[in-house]
Length: 213
Image (cartoon, rainbow, N blue to C red; front, top):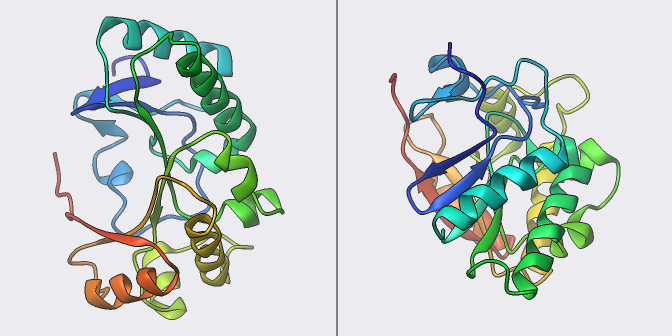
């Protein structure tokens, strides 16, 4: 197996593989189906999570090589498990952009929305200083289905309400965009998830169910 990839290009973005840890084991998660591979990259960190300095050095190399439209916290884990690293990297990138070091790009966080529970506090004000866009993987229109599809770890079984509160908090915090998503063909009702997202003040994205590579 090739060496673990920490920063990788996909379409018009640079993606940061910060951790493999996640409080959910979603029934549709592709990290088990694809054996931690994505688009030719090995995203299995094997317990060796990158340091902030490592990530920033790799980002600097890639950003100098070619511009991107966005930098995204999105690997095969939940980025807010390493909130301090997300904040440090996001703030450093924003400072570098303000200094004219890189062409303009957005900083996006892809999250399951459990960051407040994970970190035992409201993380939205901190995130506001580090990212521009927040995408929340909602995937269910009610708590019962959320538990069935997202299969949360012990301690997170009642996390659906926290996800909604996080989504509402982000929607009112002034990010450039906040969106909730739903994977198609999982048993969830995309129209109902869209309505729930709208009630929280968020946009909606329907995501394709990805099959075996």
